[in-house]
Image 1 (cartoon, rainbow, N blue to C red):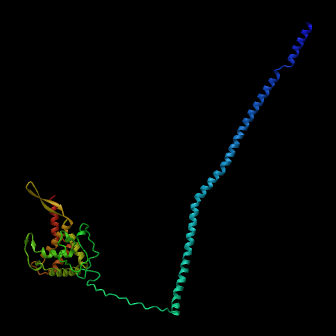
Image 2: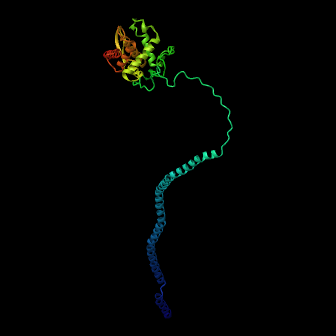
Length: 342
């Protein structure tokens, strides 16, 4: 028994000298220290790695940015460079052009000078050509520039009133007599020359006063040759007095003597009252020619004055817009009555 107790005590005493869990505690401490070191190393390495990545990115991006800047500069500079090149080329061409022209002119002159020498040196025999048959053309009875009575040109006369331009005909004509070719259709009288229309008014209208035929002899007999010759004499008088184209004087007199409004009768409830109305352009020309013809004829009644001088005086007074002449006075009376009846 005592031997067994000694063995047990010896075993208990030896057991604490070599504990089993001691190495585990050292291992855990070492692993924790290693883990802490690793984490510290990782923390220290992380910013370094980030910095390295940023540096790599910046290094990789730097050439791209530089290339973009260079491209932008080149794009911005390209048109300037192209313009400079074009300017240089144009300047060079301009500087070269006169030389080229001189060079071209030189050989041409030499050729021109050299040609007659060659022809004189080596004459060429030309074959005789067959004679060409030319038919004789009949001579035109009218001159190339047709003028009224062979004296006055109707081209280039300006009609100031735009409403009367289509109704005052100034086509070139030699003698103001068409033989009634425009009487077949209504309103074709505007295709007649204005001088011929005035002559027709002088032949058939001057003998009338209202609805009564008062004068039926002389120029009112319908003989066209008498009035045509009187018109030529009147134009010669106008040319001497005014130093202007008599056709232009006639046109301006027609414009001044043409009324713009007149009176017509309107019935309301059995009562007639005057109503002002506008006048159409064609009627304006007709009324103006009637007033001028009446004024011309009235200056010859019981007066020692030729018919040509009476026509000339009336046309000159209407051209000057003189209120004392017959045509302008009648026009002013009609317009005054129309304005009073509003």
